Structures are given as C-alpha cells and as structure tokens.
Amino acid sequence: MKIIVTGGAGFIGGNFVYYELKNHPEDEIICLDKLTYAGNLETLEEAMKNPKFKFVKGDIADRKFVYELFESEKPDIVINFAAESHVDRSIEDPEIFLKTNVMGTQVLMDACRKYGITRYHQVSTDEVYGDLPLDRPDLFFNEDTPIHTSSPYSASKASADLLVLAYYRTYKLPVTITRCSNNYGPYHFPEKLIPLMIANALADKPLPVYGKGENVRDWLYVEDHCAAIDLVARKGKVGEVYNVGGHNEKTNLEVVKTILKQLGKPESLITFVTDRPGHDRRYAIDPTKIHNELGWLPQTKFDDGIKKTVQWYLDNRNWWESIISGEYKNYYEKMYANR
Ligand code: NAD
Ligand code: TYD
Image (cartoon, rainbow, N blue to C red; front, top):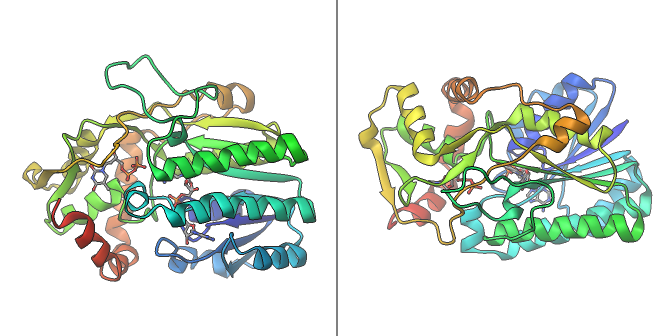
C-alpha cells in the first residue's frame, strides 16, 4: 500500500509517519509538506533513513504540483493533516487558513477523483462543533452535534469537512473524517499551550494564561490519535465521521500547574493576560462510535502522557530551542508583548 501523508513535517503528521513506519512496515509513506513555519524537517530525520519513506516539498493547494505527484506516485490512500492549525494566527490573518484548509482539501480530493484512490481521510477537529458551556458537564460532542464554529480556523476546518462529505455524496469519493480533541506530545510546535508553557517555565519566563484559565480542553496523547486515524482510514466506514477523544478534560490552569509542578517551578510564573477573542469555553468528545465500531480506546492517561511529554522537551531541547530562537521570536513579541 502507498500512502500520501500531507503535513507530515508538523506535529500530528510527524507522529503519524512514525506510527505507520512502526506498525505497517510493509507500506510506503510519501510525506507531502509545504514546510511552512510549522513544518520542520528535523522531525522527520529518523524517518528519512527508512527506504519506505519519502519526503516531497509542495503545497496541497497547488493543483499542477499535486496532480503531477499523484500521476507519478499513484497512491492508494491519502491522509490529509496539512493545515494552518493555530487559532490565534487565524484571528490575526484568516486568509491562508481558507487557502490551505479549504482550497487545499479540494485540490487533494480532485486529484483523488482524477487518479483514483481507495481512501481519502480528512484529519479534522472537535472545534468544528463550537464550544460547550462550563456549567453543563453532562454535555459532549457526538457526530450528530451541529457544526457551529467560533474562529476562522474552526470555520475553515468545518468548511473542509462539508466539502469532504459533499465529494462522498456527489462523486462517491471514498472518504472518512476524524474529529479529534486537543493533542499533546512530542514535536508539538511551541506556539501551542502545552509546549509554550514548558518552554517558558524552563526559561523562568511568565506563563501567559488567557482570561482566568477556566477554559476546558479534552487532552489526548498524540499516539492515541494516530492509532485512531490509522484505524479509521483503513477500516472505518466510507462517508462516516468519527469523533476521537479520551475523556481527559482539564482547565488550562490545571494543565499549567501540572507542568510547573513537574518542572519544579513556582506558580508565581503564571500571568493572566487578555483573553482570546471568541475563546471557546469547553470542548468534550463522546468517543462511543469509534469505540463501538472499531474498538479504539486511548492507551495513555493524562498523568503519564504529560510526564512523557515534559521529559521529551527536556531531552530534545535542540528541536524546540532552534524554533523559538528564529522567526518565532517576532510572532511571540507580536502576540504577547502588549497583552
Ligand atoms: P501543525 O501546524 O503542527 O502542522 C501542520 C503541517 O502542515 C506543517 O508541517 C506545515 O508545514 C504543513 N502545511 C501547512 N500548509 C500546507 C500546505 N498548503 N501544503 C502542504 N503542507 C502544508 O498542525 P498539527 O497540530 O499537527 O495538526 C495537523 C492536523 O490535525 C490539522 O489538520 C489540524 O486541524 C488537525 N487537528 C489538530 C489538533 C491538535 O490538537 N493539534 C487536534 C485535532 C485536529
Ligand atoms: P491552543 O494550544 O492554542 O489550542 P486550541 O485553541 O486549539 O484549543 O490553546 C489551548 C488552550 O490554552 C485554549 O483555551 C487557549 C489557551 N492558551 C492560553 O491560555 N495561553 C496561551 O499562550 C495559549 C497559546 C493558549
């Protein structure tokens, strides 16, 4: 089997490349990635040594390039991780989110139609469902929850999902979609909550918590997400959406305090800053469908996963220190200086 993994130089796509090489050594993986600010070839350094792996630099929204790639590679499966993924950046400048997340998805699916594939899998997010109130712990997102987005990022992901389902209904393209909650683990870009807080704490810099830190996210260790995608892309029912999450809800403040405790740093580093506009209050996934239909269950508990993650950042300083000392510095200044 030949699999095109788009966005494989990013956080989840990179972890997925390693998951596939380990669990399906017979398959060939082609990573297609534009190497935006979020893509990092160092993440794929080990994979590059594997003859079953190939890296190709390119833009999923570039039709000519994508068609040529499909023409020469003739993939069986396409798994689309490639996206602009940061909510705060989408608030600053939505345009590239529409171009990559919506138009890029369309181009990939057109290539799938033209050259023929056995499965197109779209990696989506629970953010397409909007948010849940903080005072209703009985409510969860299931696959029938209406789409109701808050940020330009989530609106672009929801638009792509609708397009994916339209290509199934109209053209019978064999698609599946997973909608997962917040991931954490190795190779997570330091603009996101968990790695940002680890990096700042290690430098004894303030930890910028938005609002009162009461917003709730449902955290899933990235390897568990990779296992779910692998299962759905190979065995999931065509035309279906599967929610992925492990019932691991935490307030942001709880997460930040756990990190500080593990690093032996004081809570006085926590600094409450101006809230994110339109900030989603709570995400919480009901993963009953993927469990009942495909037997998926998360393997890593938050307490263990966060320990492993903090340790990974301690052991791999080169990976993230080279990021935060480069162009990222300007982003950080712009986003946090006057917050
Ligand atoms: P990321 O930002 O770490 O990585 C995105 C990757 O896509 C990068 O390597 C980047 O270079 C590449 N890319 C961006 N634009 C591209 C383009 N036009 N053409 C080719 N490559 C391009 O993102 P992530 O956190 O790994 O998220 C991966 C996917 O999972 C996204 O679709 C995201 O919406 C979804 N998702 C993320 C989370 C999460 O918690 N991070 C949760 C649920 C779903
Ligand atoms: P983030 O990692 O950006 O993921 P998402 O917005 O997709 O859930 O943020 C996770 C939560 O942490 C979210 O409620 C916003 C909050 N947050 C902060 O409080 N401070 C920060 O510096 C960042 C980046 C996020």
